[in-house]
Every structure is written in C-alpha cells, then in structure tokens.
Length: 220
Image 1 (cartoon, rainbow, N blue to C red):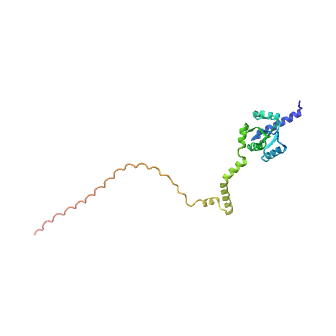
Image 2: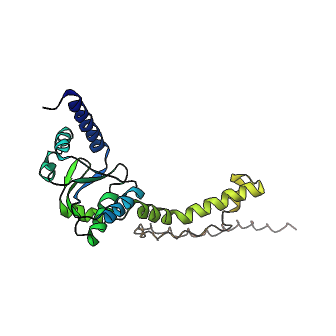
Image 3: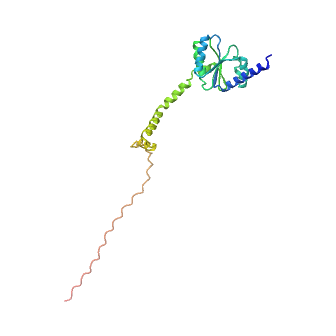
C-alpha cells in the first residue's frame, strides 16, 4: 500500500491535471507507441512552436481527473501508452498539428479528443483539423480591413504633417457637388373633378345718356 507521501503526490498530480483540463480550449489524446525518437522529437517541436503543451500521462491519474471535469466518456481511451496535446488559447492547433503529423507517421494513433468540455469523435477531430488556423483567420480579417485602415493612417498623418484640424480636413474632403438623388416619381393621384368655370359676366351695356329736352322756340 502506498505511503502517505506517495498518495499526496498523486493527489497533487491529479489536481494539476484537473486544472489543465479546465483551462484547455481543446485537447487531442494519442497513442504514441511505435514513434521513433526522432519522430517524437519532431512532433514535440512542432507542438511547442504552436504553443501546444504535449506530455505523456498516466492513465490511472487521468481517469481520476476526467471525473472532476465531466469528461468521463474519455475513460475507455486511457489505456496503453497515452499522451495528450492541449492548448489554452487555440482550439484548432492540437488537432491540426497532430492530424497533419499522423498522415506521414502511421505509428501515431489519434484516440480521442475534447473541446469546450465536450468529447469529440474522430470525425469531429478530422473536421477540426481542416479548420483554418488562428493565424490564417486573423490574416484574412486584417486583409479585409486593410483598405479602411490605410485610409485612416493617411488621414492621421495628414493631420500631423499639416496641423489641419480634423473638422477642416473632413470639410476639404467633402465633394463640391452633392450627387443628385434620384427619387422615383410617385404615382399621380387622380385629378379631382374641376368645377365648371363660371361664364364671364356679360358686360353691361353703357346706359344711354338722357336726351336733352328740345328748346322751345324763342318768342318773336
């Protein structure tokens, strides 16, 4: 029966594994049996350069640890020589590097994996491995933002070089002619029936001036 010191050491190792499982964005469990020393060294180098932790683990300790993080479905894979590759910030890197390496090294067998607290099937690991890496995704995003950023940099540099106030610079960049806005003609409303125009009043004939009375003949 192991003494108290050994038990405490194992408890500490299990606690460390629990933290690693909790903090990992993803992990790939492999059987490294059959890899040559040179191949193993090459694999470790590739993973290390990508910021992926890779270590050989004891199955019994892992079986205790996975119970603490609700990954009991991984229990059957912790048999035989076992190593695990885990990343805390790039969920794609472990699967991509391991899968690419296994294409040319059949001795490396992918057992299972997990991501965000869920167990991955082999098909899901394959799909994950085919996902673009974080660097490729970032490069794509930056490329799409390149033009607007370049314009912003040029504008800021112009402000520094000329001392022009941003408001004045913005005003200079406003086109002189405002593009004409074409508005679709609205359907004409039916014309209201117009009231018949009043007939012009007949001009009144000027009244005839009264005739002057005839003068009586002067008496002789």
